[in-house]
Length: 416
Picture 1 (cartoon, one colour):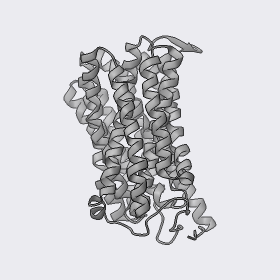
Picture 2 (cartoon, one colour):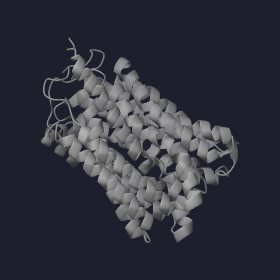
Picture 3 (cartoon, helix red, strand yellow):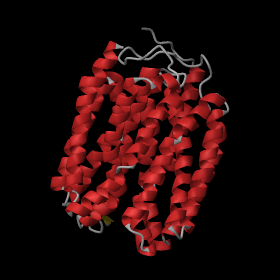
Picture 4 (cartoon, rainbow, N blue to C red):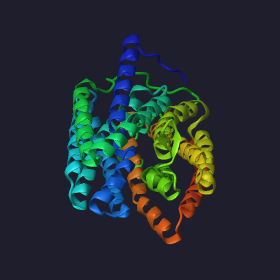
C-alpha cells in the first residue's frame, strides 16, 4: 500500500488547523473537568443534594454527545470551508451563554437548562475538531485525534487552581460568569479561521500498520454494522467508569478525608489530584493514539484497559492515603482518557473518511449513554457506605472490554 505525500503548503496548513482545534478543546475542557469544583459550593449555597446537582452533569454529557451526530452532519453537509467555522462559532456562543446562566441559576431547573446549553455548545466544538483531525491526518490518525482530544482532557489543568481560588474568593457564581464569558469570546475569535481539507488536498491512505477500509460508509450503513454496535457497547462500558470518577473525584476525596489535607507546596490533595489527573488524561490521548498507529487499535486497548482495571482496584484498596490517592487517580485518568482517541480512530479506520465526522460522532453518543450510569455510583455509595463496590465494578468492566477487543473486535476486523 502506498502513501501519497502531502504538499508542503498542505502539510503546514493541516498542522495549523490541528493546533487551532487543540486550543478550542482546551477552552471547553473545564465545562466537564472543572465541574467537580462547583458541586459542593452549589450544594452549600442552595441546599441541593449532590445527586440532584449531578443530574446537571449527566444532562451536560448527554447533550454534549447525543447531538454531535447532527452537528457533525451539518459540518459534513456544509463542506470544509463553511461547516467548521459555523459550528465552532455557534458552539462558542452557546458555552459562553450557558455558564452565565449557571451563574444566575436559583433553581435546579435553571441549572439543568444551563447544562443542556453548555453541552450542546461543547458538542458542536468537539465534533468539529475531532472531525477535522481525522480528515486532515489519515496518515497519523491516532496521534492527531489524540492531540485534539488531549486538549479537552488536559485543558482543565490550566484552570483548576484559578477556578478554585476564584470560587473561594468571589464565589462560584462569579467564577461561572467570568470564565464563561472569556471562553466564549476567544472561541468566537478562532471560529472564522477553522476549515477542513479540500478534496484531493490530503493523502487518502493510511500506513499499512493500521487496517483501513477503502469504502466510505454512509451513516446508514454504519448503523447497520454489527462492528459499530460492538464498539458502541465497549465505549459505553469504559466511558461510564471514567465519568463516574470525573464527576465524583471531589466527593470521593472528601469521603476519604483527603480533600483539605495539604500535600505539596501548600496545595491540597484534591488540588494536586485534579491538576495531575487533567495532565495525565490529556497525555493519554496522543500517547495511546500514537501507540495505536504503530501496534494496532485493539492491542492498545488491551494494554490501556488492563492497566485501568488495576487502577480502579488500587484506588479501592489503597486510595485513602494522600499520595496513593493522587497516584491511583492519575493512573485511572491516564488509562481512561485514551478512549477519545482510540475509538474515533477505529471508527474512521472501519468506515472511511468521507462521512468521518458524522460516523465518529454517532459512536461518540456512547459517552452520553454512559452518563446515565453516573448517578448509580451515588446510589451504590449510599447503600453500601463506601466507594469500594463502585471501584470493583469499574475494574471488572475494564477487564471485560479487554477481552472484547482482543477476541471479538480484532478477529472481526481481520476478516474484513
